Image (cartoon, rainbow, N blue to C red; front, side, top):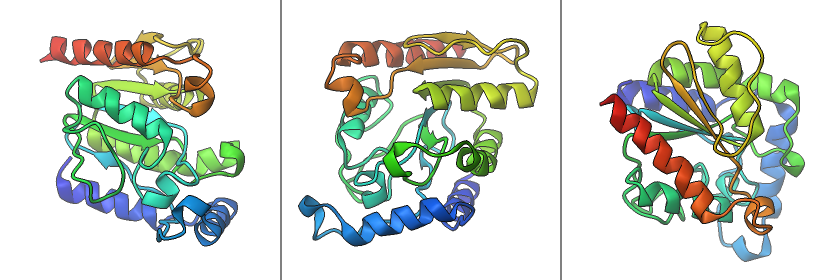
Length: 229
C-alpha cells in the first residue's frame, strides 16, 4: 500500500471508540501510571500498526501491553516482549536495530509490519470475543491493503485471527489447524502462516519460549520470503 493509505488506516485505528471498556482501561492506566514511568506522558488509546507499508511479512500479536505499547504508542515497544521480538527481527534483517524504546528511537522495519488482533490494552491482557470482533475490520483492512505473503502469529489468538481471515478470503477451507510453536500452514492462495509462542514474560521466564526457538521461526519466515523472490 502507499504511505498515505498506511497513515490513513493508522489514523482511523487510533481514533476508534468501539470498545468503551478498553478505552476506559487504557486511559485509567495512562492516568495512574507505573512508578517507574511517572515522568512519561502515556499514549493511552488504540495503538496503530507499525512497520513497512509494503511489507511481505506481517507479525500478528494479541494486544498492546498496559505499560508497554499503551505507554509508548508503538507496537511491542517498552516491555520485555518487545525486547525479544525486535532482537529476533534485527537478527534476521527485518529491523534496522534490536532495541525499541519509544516512537522516536530510529527503529525501522524492513519488509515487515506488526499488527494486533486487538489494538487496545485489555484488563488482565484478555480482550473479550466481542472486543476482538470489533477490531476485525482493522485487521481486514490491514491485510487487504498490505497484501503480505507470510503471516507470523504470536500466540493462539493471532493464529485464529489469520485463519478466520483466510476462510473469509476463500484461501482456506476445513478444520482449523492446531496452533503450536513452529506450526505452519500454506493456504490455497500461496500465503503462509507460521506460529510462535508469544514472547510474553510468562513464556520467556519459564523457558517455554527460548531465543533459539523464536529465532528459528523468523529464520523460516525469511526462508519462505526469499524463496518467493
